[in-house]
Each structure stands twice: as C-alpha cells, then as structure tokens.
Amino acid sequence: MAFQQLAHDLYKTSPAQTGAPRSLEYDAIARITRQLRDASRKGPIGFSALVEAVHMNRRLWTLFATNVADTENALPDGLRAQLFYLAEFTQVHSAKVLSGDANVRPLLEINMAVLRGLRGGATT
Image (cartoon, rainbow, N blue to C red; front, side, top):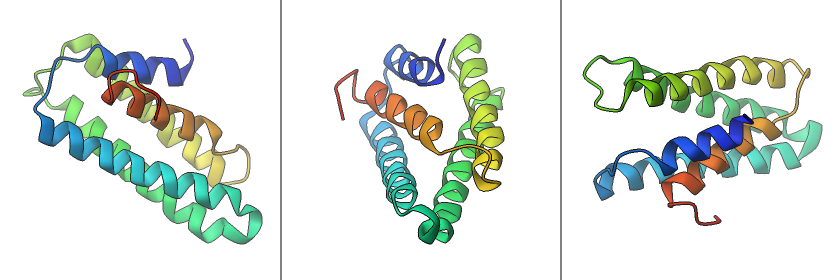
C-alpha cells in the first residue's frame, strides 16, 4: 500500500478524538507541510529552508512515534504499529532528501494524506 494511502486510512479510521488535540495535530502538520512544500519549490537556493522544514517534520514524526510506542496509548495495536512504520519511513526518507538522494514529494504526500484523514477524508 502506498505510504500516503496508509497515512490517510490510518487517520480516517482512527477512533474519534476530542476536537482540540485533533485540531492541534492538523495545524502542526499543515504548517510543517507548507514549509516543506515552499522550501522544495525554491530549489537549490532554498536548501537551508528545506533543511529546517525537514528537521521540523522529523521532530513531528518522532513525537508521533514516541506517542504510539507508549504502552498507555489507547489506539489499537495495529494502528499504532502502522503509524510507527510511517514515522520510521519518514526518518529514513528525510535523510535521503537531505543528502540529495531523494526528493521531498513522499514526505509531502504522507503529510497531506494524514491531513485528509484528520479532516475526515475531505480534500485540503
């Protein structure tokens, strides 16, 4: 399954959360996704902005991974494992982006899929 579809499906089918945490997640992912997109559009002259955006995205996904790895996390085990997998992919792919061996598109697609899932499948 494509990473972006996995991310979308995970958030679309996750148990209902209170509005505030879900809204905070959405806002954080949306802000970082915009930074990634804007920096990548600048090309080589935007590399420092890309480094910062990738760093922020990594921090976000590290937070997600830490959260789902917590034994107190109430999400179903399968969902937790899938989110952890996306976090691992994001870490590995980010390193490739920073070394110039990959582009940022898969990171953007994953984040956008999660955003769509948080919005209940609506296009963002």
